[in-house]
Structures are given as C-alpha cells and as structure tokens.
Length: 104
Image (cartoon, rainbow, N blue to C red):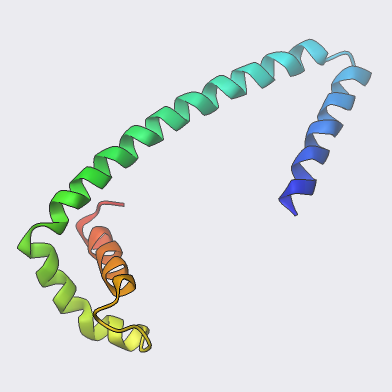
C-alpha cells in the first residue's frame, strides 16, 4: 500500500510545484531532506553499534543469564509453545532484559 501512496505524494508535490512556480523551493527541500536523512542514518548507525556492543558484553555476564532464568516462568506463561532450548526463547529473554536494563 505504501508503494502506491508515496509515489502519489511525490508526483502531486512536483505537479503542485510546477503549477504554482515553487519548483526552486521544491528542489531545495528535496536536497535538504536528503542531507537530513543521511545525517540521521549515520547517527542511528552509531547508536545501534554502541548498544549492540553493550548487549554483546552483557550477554557474557552472569547477571543477564540470572535475569533470563528469573523471566522463565513469565515467558513460559506468555509463550507456552516455545521450548527453553530454542534460540527464540533466548532472543525474547535478551530483549526483555535489555528493556529492563534501559538499553532500548
């Protein structure tokens, strides 16, 4: 659905810019928005790398494994079909532990 909506927005904005003589402002806004998007992507990439590193360190500590064990009854109730030995259980536990530790 978004594959249809966004091109329509772009086409309508270009037609509006051409019809009302705002094509220069439209071009400037396109380049400015592109610059902002690249800056945001670089900032988010750095943040994601930082927290992924912290989570890798936290995975190796005993605190995280203890918190995972404490979460086992709750996860067993919420997800009864998941076995404890499955990778999915570990990923869900790690996500909840990260949220508890404030590493969102």
